[in-house]
Length: 375
Image 1 (cartoon, rainbow, N blue to C red):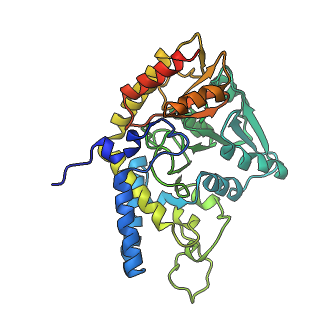
Image 2: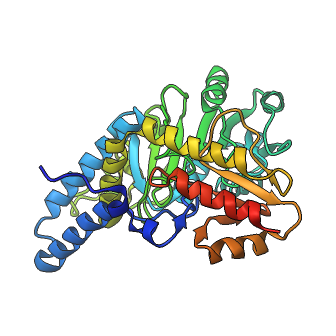
């Protein structure tokens, strides 16, 4: 049996720099690239001769993600990106004037704009304020009323790394019959997530961050009982039960989540998700989470509090940390890091680091030494 590639072979980016920017766009694993190249060669040489096999692989990928999230394959759809998935729910559900939606103040725009757009229909959007880079769930509870129809939240805050307690939020929503919608793009693929245990009704996550896949293909989960209440906002030949019978025109929508896949599938993107998910599962999501949160804990504990303010205020360990320079402009600090081949991001006037399982303690030590050494 061929041995599994080493981390250095799987992620050659390590030979070029300390890449700590997975919360933005993660590098593609070499094994995923290898399989995609094989598929492209097959496409070039045989056209769609093996199309039925491609569809079987997509079916298998749907089953794999269902297993990964602990849900049913019929509740999984592949969509263009997280924004698309959230918009399907926001615009497809029958919200009425006077209905209320609760969101969190500093969400990424993809999890705010679709909900704010509903205010034109008379829907009231309530906002939970951020307090010292975290949230008080008592304030969240106070905003819930009998008119609350949905609560939208991110798994992990994209800028600060605040990790929400999805189990608690989901349980409270379930008690009140409130739809619980999660933008999981920050966290899915690096932190364990049991959708059923967290009472999540809807979830979406693009593959280009922690799932180690290209941009433009996302996995979407929608609970079986919610599917009939969400009208697809885009329709096509693949939306209906008899999708391969082009001569019969009858609008009988598929009963499962596949009704949201209105046209030709993104075979390239879905295959990439398949192979990268296989790698993540082979390494083990619990093992990945333990390693990554250990790395972020190291950064929090060792970066100078005399020079940087940490945005991290959560009790739960996270995959993202952010440090605001107290005496320097963040862009100036970031340029110095880039000059040393350290790559993160500037978010909320701080330097954000988001390591994955291929990163190591030696790389974190380099980050600490450089940041603490800047005068």
